[in-house]
Image (tube, rainbow, N blue to C red; front, side, top):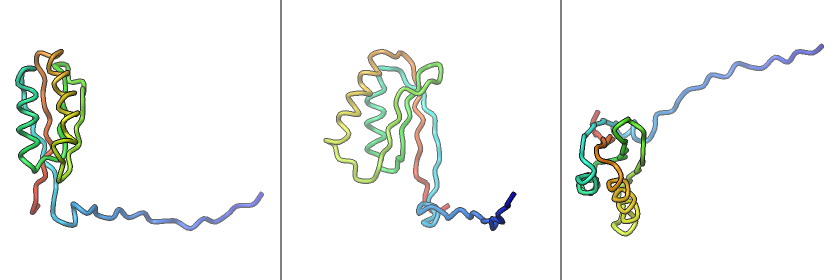
Length: 105
C-alpha cells in the first residue's frame, strides 16, 4: 500500500473587485400591492445604484430576481418589466427586496 504525501494547500480568498473599490451591499425590503409593483420596480431601476431586485409573493416565495448592471438600456429591461407586469396581474400583495450598492464602506 502506497501513500502519497499531498502538500497542504492554503486557500486564501481574494477580495472581489467591489471589495477592493470599497463597495458593499445593503438590502431593503418594501411591501407593495400588485398594482403598484411595476411602477415601483421602474422607479428602482432608474435610481441607478441598484444591483438586484427580488420580487416575492405574500408567502415569501421568490417569483423573479432581476440582476441590474450599470448601463442597462431601456430596450433590454422592457421584457423584464413585461414579466413584472404579468406577476403584478396575479399577485395581490408582494414584497420587493432591493440590493443597493454602498460605496466607501
